[in-house]
Length: 100
Image (tube, rainbow, N blue to C red; front, side):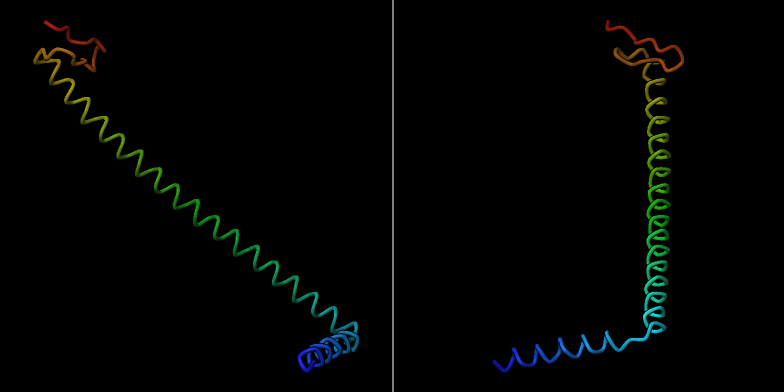
């Protein structure tokens, strides 16, 4: 019973406080809410840019790594083809070295 009385008193106080707000106070509260919303939107946009730039850097690193691996494999295949190892592909011609 006591908790209900305290809760009811809090609700009445909030209602009276809201009713006591002047139009100027309501406009100020709305303006503050609008500014807060804009700041939240700006923060979200910045976070999106940070994530995108990180993804771009990661993609570049993967691309560079894949290029390095491809160059190494091409060198290995060129060497194997020059030695006549069966199954190797000469990168210059795309021809596979036949099995003996």
